[in-house]
Length: 443
Image 1: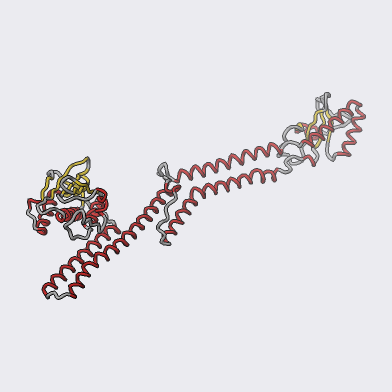
Image 2: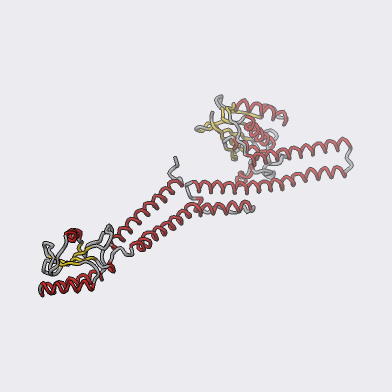
């Protein structure tokens, strides 16, 4: 069932309103035309009233004068006529056949509307002043009603319906075609590599399907633009980072180093470049593919123990320098491998920037339906205005946190890993150093 903001309801209102308007307008105008065209014209009223006055004067002059007037009327008007009294008896010496007497029952007053059911011209009755008599005659052809009925119907009924149809098409165009045309222009802008084209506010603010389509296209535009910018930035940073070890290799080749020193220097630089390329490719894959990891319950304490043991072996730290205060029931909903890599990158980063006798500690705090996993070091921290930048690739704030030789990709990869699990990550300074917080759902 469409929701209340669906375009379906707008179309229902538009089409139903159009149909109701068409029916009402056609019926109303048709009735007005029928009513107007069924009455005799003012000229016909004047002529028939004049005949009645003439008949009245002839009636006052006597039966012979009335008969003479009737005979004269037969010369003036082609058609049947008679003057009758209150009892429908003919005056002026006229005689009526039985069929003509029956015709008197179908007479209509000349001021009444004329019926269209008559095959021929109707009989109309015109009262003769103060006498009770009436002039009954076949309506002259020139006074026939309904003469222009078809033309009036075409002009007053069908023309408004055509105008309503044009209005309906205009509204339909505004509701459907115009927004789609805006979306088409934005899609064409994408195909033309113009990624700065933004969705009009009129479409972005809609709550129907077109608004959803527009916002999806807007998101696609921004996502594509950010992805291209990110790739270009990655290429620039990667080329910059590769220049340093390549320059050192060139200097080593031009120096008088011994074979063993040259081998160690070459192995070190190649390992560094391989690590740089692998990390860059991993971050680019996370950024472009945005995979959704399969989540499962993860024991945070057991995972931290494994990561701490490996980190101490690599860094040469004693085990007591990596601490943990994790409740026994601390289990999060996440992907084991992704969470392990994210926490490992944070842990290595904390070890890299820790002082010679510093420690790294993990603590867990429950917050509603989530666990907050905090990894704190005792390093120099990061300036507050630069905290949002540490999760960007190749962001190395060596002036604030000296002592590392990484490439600035560890935290960027960790952030992507956490976000792909439906969590969140942020950094904040503490009195003793930097605190990295991972927020994941409770199992």
